[in-house]
Amino acid sequence: MRPARTRTSRPRSNEPFPSAVSSAADRPGDRPEGRVLLLVTSSSYRAEDFLSAAERVGVAVTVASDHEQAFAGVAPAASLFVDFSDSDRAVSTVVKLHREHPLAAIVAAEDEGTILAAVASAAIGLPHNPVKAVRIARRKDRFRETLREAGLPSPRFVTFAIDEDPDCVAGRATDDIGFPCVVKPVSLAASRGVIRANDESELAAAFRRVVGITSTAGSRGDAREIIVEDYMPGAEVALEGLVVDGELRTLAVLDKPDALEGPYFEETLLVTPSRLPEEQQKAIRWTAGRVARAIGLSHGPVHAEMRVNDDGVWALEMAPRSIGGLCSRMFRFQAGVALEELILLHAIGAPIEERPTPTGPAGVMMIPIPRAGRFVEVEGTETARSLAGIEDVVISLRPGQEVVPLPEGNQYLGFIFARTADGPDAVECALREAHACLKIAIE
Amino acid sequence: MIEFTEAARERILAFFAEEEGTRLAVRVGVQNPSPVAPEYAMSLIELEEIEECDERHSVDGLDLVVDSESARILRNTRIDWVESIEGSGFNFNNPNIKPLGSEPLTGPLVERVQRVIDEHINPGVATHGGAVRLVDIRDGIVYVQMGGGCQGCGMASVTLTQGIKQVFMKLVPEIVDIQDVTDHAAGTDPYFSPEK
Image 1 (tube, each protein chain N blue to C red):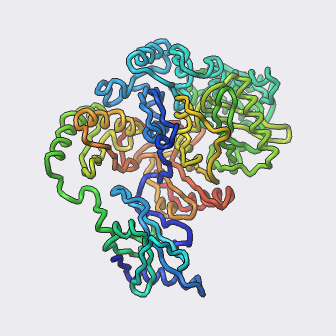
Image 2: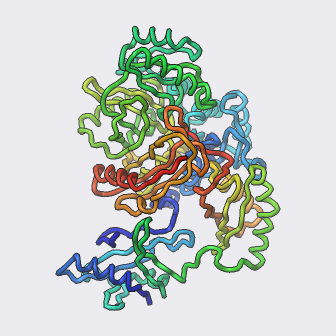
Image 3: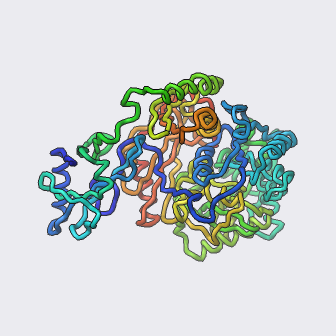
């Protein structure tokens, strides 16, 4: 590596992800007020980034999660135990907290907390998404029905209970949907349990497998149904947005340059800005806005997955939460603000500019899991970090952990982050080069 | 004065040679003087890019440019060029930014902080199989390492901000911040593991 004319030499130590975020609270007029209740599961990837953002913004946070935290009781407003699956009791707990430590907002970091956030916000009188809208977004079958009723493109689907006979399911879905088709649990995310089937026997086998995945998904899969739907060909994109005053503001459209054609749908690369023609991007933004309105999302972050083909833009999912894993670290908005800062500022009522956009080309690779086994280590991370355009490599598995690839897998191996002014092609290239440096040991 | 090792000097001269016909200087600076992960900047510049606030030195035949603030922090720093299977690059050996924990921890503040860790923090994290170790105290910032169930735990940041920091705010208010310097990637027995 040479000290290029304009490029900073990479620090050689194993430092945390370099933060270019300035303190939002330092900016005039942005000083926030009120406490935010952050709903995270104890298996969340998102806690650290939200807590760092809260510190930078200067907002007090109570963390509510589904397990007792180590210091529960030491600082009563710092953490809270709530059972996301027992809504009534969880709402009572939140309302009690609000009486003693008034809340300005409730933010769900991931899917599990979205319904509780809406119900508890309604009970307290805080701005929130309608509970009905969140319930629709949590289930792929209701989401598709709602889109169809609104006249928006949506794959045809059939819903089955997990205890139905796989061969009968395959027969019915063959008649109603045909091939290729995709089998999915109604409520899991991140491509878990998503399998393409090209004929009746593959479909029966996929259904059996997805039953197993749904049955062991715990609180992540709180619905016991599976859908079989049309396989939608075309380019897949993700959209990150923030609904402000009922209008969806698109923060970024993200290309997924690796083909997602099955049999499993492991997401790897996300790159922004999108390289799709502007007309298509316009259609993506327009469709996302229509989808948010159709299902009734009116407040806060959304993350959508969409496919684009000759027949139009097809919304596969829209969740009332921000992007998962550590992927949000790819975003930097004006003044270096992180996505979580934007979400928290909006949640507590700070003004959000008309159309916040990331400050430059950036991307992330969710490092693919090559095979099942016991994770040992990843070599080559320092070499990968030293490449031009690479900001960081984070390995999120721990030595000795059992690792399972998709469709069963529920963990990320790690993340590579890239940012370069040379454009999205250079971002993608840097991510692929960095990945090629990694030697992943699984035994 | 900043020094270059022979390897670093040769490497810089090789970079200069690639820009034949242009007289260049090497600019070094401190981007972040944190004792946890100091960050340095190094670039090749043309002589007209030298600014008024810069110091300019001739070191072993190299034109060296440093802004005045960085010059203070980089005093007596030795810059080396290192190559390993993990990559190559310039390494700053800076005696002014001493590694955390490199000096004995003594004094009344250290004793108070250690007592809080022993009596309030560790009994708390022990419920999750964790332990916290005091690494250093500098400029009112306490640096800690989290071990056992806390090392690599998905909720370590919650334990830090919503637990450990809260305890210190109450019991040692002169502490301005707590920073976690744990290598969480090496944790083998985390209490909570993240899931999609």
